[in-house]
Image 1 (tube, rainbow, N blue to C red):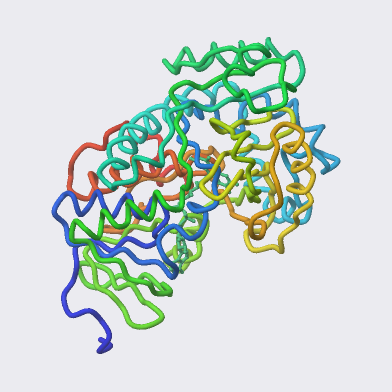
Image 2 (cartoon, protein in one colour):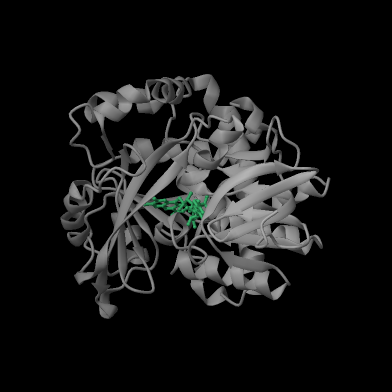
Length: 418
Ligand SMILES: Cc1cc2nc3c(=O)[nH]c(=O)nc-3n(C[C@H](O)[C@H](O)[C@H](O)COP(=O)(O)OP(=O)(O)OC[C@H]3O[C@@H](n4cnc5c(N)ncnc54)[C@H](O)[C@@H]3O)c2cc1C
């Protein structure tokens, strides 16, 4: 044993301090366990920092829904703002692509929507409780999320509203006038709107997750910054190899977001994860013409969210290797469209890139590793990880302590793929 190995074994080491890892660490600590939270960077410096900040009640229909098939021809030319893809990547990952598309079968929609509804419902409850506990309540806005169409898409909006209503999720149909009443500072370009009334948003996802991390530390948890190199079985527990030593733990929670597959491969787990990359750029707002809530331009395939630093414009999906060089074409194409809706000034800082970690059925993996005891998987939260992080973490802490997760976790079992 290296002299840098921590002398005593802790109960739980959580790998990754994004929203999922921070949540798992806090929930485990709340249950009285000794917990170390590890990340090579400060908490919430990656995907959990750069997202659109939406705590979405209505994101129960995964991207690979039945209508994706009819939209595919429009994506083939690789010029659509919603989806850019790298053909060489698609060929190398044809197995993932085939499995992802197989999940567009109509029979696969309801089970997945039901599963996500449980996860999202439990998570929103936790966010609303934790954000107060973490002294960050000023960052949450209960103003909903507006999806808006420039064309006369009333039928599409009605269909989405009916689908959500079947799951008890409220929304409100809006015409041009009602949209202007809600968002008086935007140019009235939208004919139809659907307001997700039970959705909230935050003005800085990075700051909120950092506040949750402080709440974990305040509850007696330990946060360590180090590069994690390996996870190795060690007697009854685990040894987590770090760039500067090692830690022994009874339980290890893998919450490394898009990096999760890397450390699991040596243990024989080939996680079928793809990376739906996305970009953001922030712009100086005009304080006299501010946005009240995030707006999703349905046909333009971008989002505009009012953030602490300015208006954050986020792009659609880029399917390629996680670490391939950035291509800002998709983001550059939507910024003028955003500018045609809301007035904003020059860019603040550089464009940001992140990777939404996605499994073929668009459900995260939440549960025990199939072939190792004391090893837990909590990753793959795709487009809605900020929303679903808290309940993902609480479910893992519940399983570790032998209690019931706050939602039906069976559909998220890692065993379905591993
Ligand atoms: C453009 C965009 C917009 C989005 N908008 C929304 C939204 O509005 N609402 C929503 O709910 N979700 C949204 N998402 C999705 C959401 O951001 C992610 O699902 C979520 O942040 C994933 O969290 P995580 O904790 O799993 O991963 P991460 O936040 O990426 O955390 C993983 C951590 O692991 C660490 N790590 C990795 N490897 C190592 C290693 N070897 N050693 C040490 N540390 C390591 C990293 O440093 C990182 O901190 C969006 C995503 C993108 C890209």
